[in-house]
Length: 217
Image (cartoon, rainbow, N blue to C red; front, side):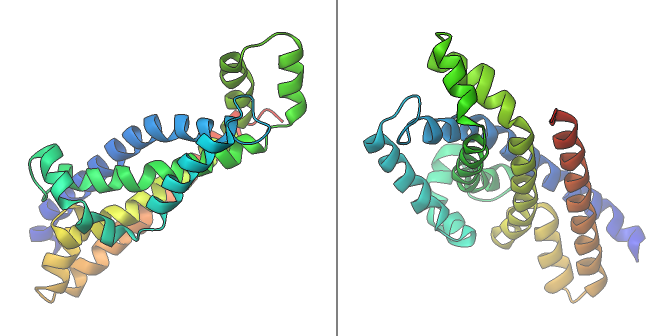
C-alpha cells in the first residue's frame, strides 16, 4: 500500500515544509518589526504615539479576526496578481504570510511587555536612543519569549498549510483531500495525520529547547 504512496507522501511533505518555512521567514521579517512598533508606540512607550498605535492595532485586529479559509478565498485576486496564480504552494504562501504577520506582531508585542520597564529607564538615563533600547535591551531581554511565541506561530502555520490544500495549495492537506477523502483511502488520511502530528511535535521540541537556551535567567 505504502509503496505507491511513499513518493506522493514525500513530495507532499516537501511542499508543506517549503510553504511553512518560507512563509514563516517572510512573516517573521515583517511581524517582528510590527510587534516592536505596536509596543513602542503604545501609551508610555519610548516612541509613544497613541493615534498611530490605535490605527495599526485596528488593522492588525481586523486581519486576525478573519478565518483563514475565508482569507484564502477573499484574496485570490491579490494572490494571482502577486504570484501569477491562485493555485499551488507558492500561491498558498500569500495568505499564510498575511495571516501570520499580525499574529506574530501581537505575540512579539506581548513578549516585549514582559521586559521590566526599569531596564528601559536605566538605558534612557544613560542616554540611549530608542533604536539602541530596542536593539540592546528590549529584543535581547524578550528573545526567549519571542522564540516561544514564534514556535506557536510555526505550529499554527503547519495546520493552516494543511487547510490550504482545500483550495489546491498542495502539501499534505491537498494529498489528504485528493487521495484520502476523494478516493476513499483512509490509510492515506491516517498517514498524513501522523506526519503532521510528528512535525508539530518536532517543531515544539526544537522551539522549547531554543527558548530555554536563550533564557539566561
